Amino acid sequence: MNPLSTGSRFQPRDRIPTHRILGPWSRIPLFLRIRDSRLWLSKWASTTGPQVPDRDDGWEDLYVTLYDNDDILYRNLGNGTFVDVTASTGIARGDYSNGAGWADIDNDGDLDLYVTTVDSLNSRRGYLYINQGDGTFVEDAVARGAEATTYNGQSVGFGDFNRDGWLDIMVDDWAFHENQAHSQLLKNDAGLFEAGLYADNTGYSPVNGPMIVNLPGVGDELNDKNRWQPLSLDFIIAQNGLPLAENTQSFLGSHWGGVTPFALTRPGPEFVYNDPGTPPQLGGTGDTEFKDAVLRVIRFSSYMDPDDEVEIDISPVANGNNTLGANDGTGHVLNPATGLVYEPQFVKRGDWGRILAEFWADGPSSETPPGHWNTLANYVSDHPLTEKRYMGAGQILEDLEWDVKLYFVLNGAVHDSAISAWDAKAKYDYVRPITAIRYMGGVGQSSDPDGLSYDPDGLPLEGGLVEVITADTTTVSGKHSHLAGYEGEIAIRAWLGNPADSENTYSGVGWIRAVEWVPYQRETFVTPPFAGYTSGHSTFSRAGAEVLTAFTGDAYFPGGMGTFTASANDFLEFEQGPSEDIVLEWATYYDASDEAGISRLYGGIHVDIDDLNGRIMGSLAGLGSWAEAQGYFDGSE
Image (tube, rainbow, N blue to C red; front, top):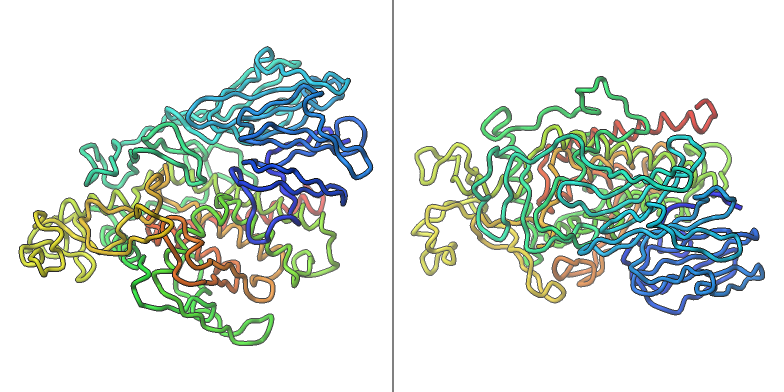
């Protein structure tokens, strides 16, 4: 009997395609395998997945949370069959269930059940079902103080954090409201609970007022052009697809640098973990570097068009093999696994850029960036050419040992990556491209002091990309004819924004007012709700690449290449596309992680310095976690 079973995202890996993990809100027919016995749940529902407790008899039963159906408890009869005992046990419910976990809350030797709920536009609560020891349960959350009001209740975990002999409950909530997190730690005092919010106690408050994205410019409350600015949208949907109640962003995780790390060490309380240093400042140190970086984001935005006939080679022979913190690679000539030259793959630049922006945005199935690297670890572990030898040497490990060690150190690394990246985000509070481009374009151009609309903070001019709108260019036959009336403003050639019919049309690229630019993202998301420096994607990804390289003993994917296929006119979600099937290819884990980093520039939400310094921070987090894990593996810890 397992006395402690936690979490809300158990998914049997042999039932999942190797390139994706099913996350919350997946609409799937649940097909589960337990001890080689199969159970078909004949209803469609949104679910975070099953929980597998052994309640009383040594056989694993099955509890399934369902968002838009009643939850189900299946009792394992021990002969390969199950029976639905939900109603008779007293835990029949169908109130937007999401996460669930089993633990002995009242110390009576029986497993009790805690269920979280989700409804992001209204507050919801948790449910605590106390096992009566006779096969029935009584819901007692309110009476015991364990209702834990949430908006998007996610996973639930248990642990005796104060070592008093009673299991406490951690309830995770995705949504943030009024600058306060609603994730809660429920302290267990002999079966009664005292809640504490995981609130931001750093005193963080944005120095800039919000930008109303649907209006031109940055608003009239931009007090510091180098600092983060929250966005106001008509409706906000988080990057993982969950709608939020508020329509103005709050800085998500500004206190995360205070979380206890796995292996990081801070030189002193005033220092940032693996401090990347101050980023370039517009109008200050690094002004030219700042402007060049902003121009590069605009240039990438101008590529997001399948009608652009430019083709590029995206194979390993032309991409990757960068040094750490740079984009200086010239690719790989030979596949070391086959001894053959990598085959070129020429595709439309506009398709490739859009695929990168979406594939790496949150994982192919909304795993979030850390989860994406768990997906890649699944891909490697399940690959038929993988030999499960620790560090590539010695005897082949059993699956269980391989999985425990790999995911232990991998998630220690991405945990530390989150802490270090968000530590830097909170300290440097760095501007995002949407604010920089709109602000700079709004004040003018900085290339020609004697020219029209000059301002030292303006955008650099580049023919065909950044230009001044003039009477000559707004004639009927002029390139800016549709911008007549805005003479003297700055126009940029960029992605035209979300199409009205994203499934069947795409927007392409054209000349727009710089003050109206938006990145290649959903109009309900636009830009993440936190500062830009450093990039979480870059930090997470390089840490993951370091771990996979060290753990497998080889920087190369199994067979010398990892792949992902984006199907024509099916894969993209922001708009229609790609125009043809395209296979992403990476020779090494480092190549994949660098692609994840640069994808944020194609997506328009980071600049170079966010990405490149994030890679360095991620490398330090990954190598540090790897070193720390060795003590757990050899027994010295």
